[in-house]
Length: 312
Ligand code: FO1
Image: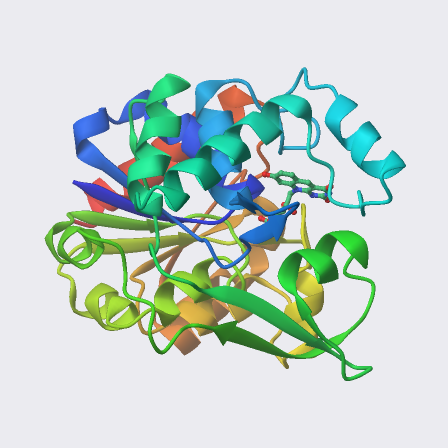
């Protein structure tokens, strides 16, 4: 069985390839919920939705989030009513958030509701929120403001340097049911190309998770979200620089050093192979990691599965 740890767009683009090669019963996808936020009283789970919509084939391909063919009538009215609309929620997307909020208020767990949403959109692979409990990522900017992640990322456009990342709820939030067991029983663990702090770092920060990954006998592989000193999407590059890490696959390997056996990096960064292998003792492989279409995603997933098998 394979366990994948996932954030938003980068992870979803990798997973759309992986699901073409791995049967539903052989894969569990554990997704970050630190970016979750309330808008208009509705519970929005951006990374869960990004992964679900992508695997369901209904995501907006260009943006990587939201439905591809959505309209914004509800937010048009909300704007007239004087509400903030900087976080774009389409009409179809709002339908999902209304359903999620309604079911949570009925007492359902986020993991149950996620299963219902995924199934109804035709996703067969298992998508598990990292926790059913309250957990929120906050970012402290150089100006001293402490902002919820979406305010920093979307409203501010991640335009300010940060000094710290805070995980609210981390002391009490438990990994959702089955997460620790899946990690300890997995043959392979794949860390998707996601932000190491606000996507994967949140999952690993949950009680027992980093330890479970470290102790698991699975072969563990991470795909670098940093390519040629930058991220394709999101603030990982800026955050790494601000927090004192080298903005490169070497910096990523350093963050995961204790929990991975293998790093997959882009061809552009091939010159770092030796440094990662020698200094960090993490086996490193190069390939194209830029996923412009489904074919690229399948090729990268096939590459990762092949090297995991070779290293078994
Ligand atoms: N990202 C944006 O840059 N602007 C938006 O208005 C926005 C809305 C949005 C709505 C639903 C959803 O599921 C995701 C959305 N995202 C938006 C993406 C999201 O902010 C981030 O990409 C993730 O949280 C980071 O993985």
